[in-house]
Image 1 (cartoon, rainbow, N blue to C red):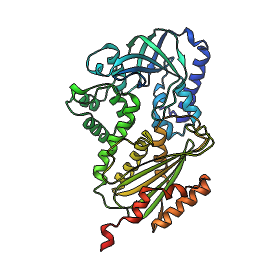
Image 2: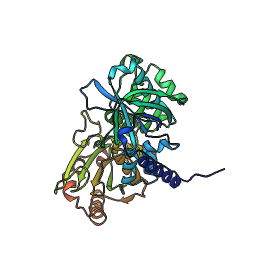
Image 3: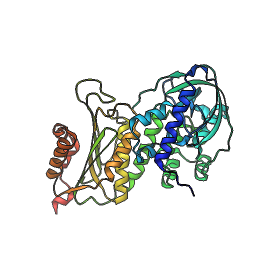
Image 4: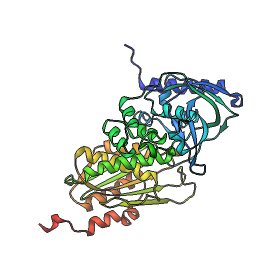
Length: 406
């Protein structure tokens, strides 16, 4: 048996990209491709809804490791750096066509091809013909991970057998709501990455309601749906017994997580230091959102998709240890995070912080002081003014709970 190490796969893919870039130095001559999709489809949100751009993502040439181009979990587990992820995404072509969101249920050829690719469990071989020249330039977005090339699609054909997991096949053919389908597949170990992809191509939900969903919306909707389902359990768990602190860093994103004994509530602070991907100014920028025990009634407009992406791994952690807590998450986006890569970085940064050993304290005061010291010493940032503005911390300090009456 031959063992293939992860570093070897990374090396092979990066080398393949370099070879293809050398071969296609004049991208204007590309009209036909014989390639494979990771599998990955992108639904754009820039057109006037209900019109959307639907794109099939693929490298310029077939790659045996095509899955690596669209596998955020793998990138995180193997500590890819920002430059490596940018290189992967810039090497993907978005071969796109316009569609109405309702076309998801009308058996239109290009839409059906995109759906087959998105629900596949392995890379899909495809032949692609483009209408005209490629345009270059990766879009900057807080939620999704952009790609480097796009061109209008003239013709597409799947040239391999499409492998679809039987559980996915069952859900898309059952007459159940999209949220129920997501819950079922998540409980059967399908990741949020797979689920958001399936949701975006309009194969989930009741037949009369099926529609294409822009990728940035489907990512946040999936994080939120899974989070709300987990919360049904978390709200019934006993409180954690200690005050707990986690911290960690990934791709220039530093996280400090404070867990307080109490009923579920969650508050996120995002701080963008000068020179980071979303802050070209010379001042620190900040945004925050909060939810109490009953949850949010409106979208978290300030921190947007990052709110739901950071909340999900925290809820997964509490569900795993079968405990309930009030949680403050502080994200410090440093200049080291020089390219916007989407909210998967948020999600995986929080997961990495939660895998580090927690530090336990006997009181809220000790926890907060420790969070301030770690932020100053390790991350060179004073978060005192942030914590002074915290709704959750004010709630912890002022609200009486039943335990105090006994």
